[in-house]
Figure 1 (cartoon, rainbow, N blue to C red):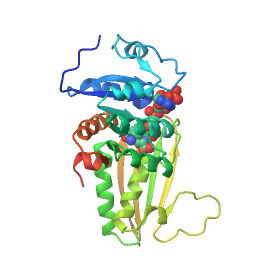
Figure 2: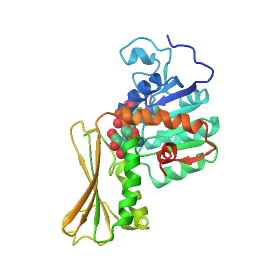
Figure 3: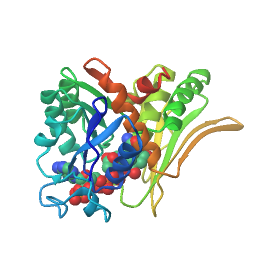
Length: 275
Ligand SMILES: NC(=O)C1=CN([C@@H]2O[C@H](COP(=O)(O)OP(=O)(O)OC[C@H]3O[C@@H](n4cnc5c(N)ncnc54)[C@H](OP(=O)(O)O)[C@@H]3O)[C@@H](O)[C@H]2O)C=CC1
Ligand SMILES: O=C(O)C1=N[C@H](C(=O)O)C[C@H](O)C1
């Protein structure tokens, strides 16, 4: 049975609890003395609904029942860890705003309409949103911005990423973070310079473009290169993730940070104090 929550522990709901990240988040909450799992959700119709989470995971009962109504779970939580899909994430942002729960968003592939809805929710609660919760990638964004600032337009910037075959969005959220960092270093808006779809007779590379390429296959957790290709030399900044627990532990850290933050929208660079 679940141990009684200590008064100062932050109560956490994990949404999409059966997912690749959902299961990692459950472990990360359990291993942190400052957090306790009080809610677990899945989509309506999922076979885990109504089961004890521990039993559904193939172990001992945890005393947390998997629910399909996020409202109940979020209402009794201090923070929600959400690595699901764009539609439920936007719904969860509204519910967190109502309940005053901090919302840690890892979901990628969000549209500009989704982003606007999340920004509206952030007027009422603290939301941390990042395409990648690892220390290494967030440090890499800072380095990418610095290198892009130091090099002139003779250096072409390309972001190359590879992920497992089940990933549904491209470019990855991390690749877009790195592209944003490179664009910021150059003092331009990524949307004005991004080149995401090369196929066929594309013509020569547009000077100043920031290109993206996405590879998919096998069980690759996540690999990202930022390539600065100049005349006679190439600089490559690389991050390789080999364990999803780096994202899950980062998300728990973000939840604890967000509980102490004022309502607003934050990223992992804020949480880690890297800016
Ligand atoms: N920011 C970061 O550091 C990271 C971000 N991610 C991102 O997190 C997201 C999830 O990735 P991953 O875990 O690999 O994907 P999975 O598909 O394994 O997990 C998503 C889970 O969400 C569930 N889900 C779908 N709809 C709902 C709903 N309405 N309510 C509750 N749960 C729901 C899915 O259920 P079902 O399968 O039955 O539909 C599934 O169990 C992706 O966007 C990915 O890019 C991943 C890793 C790190
Ligand atoms: O879907 C994944 O798996 C991952 N998604 C995130 C992304 O889109 O960048 C983070 C990580 O690379 C794994």
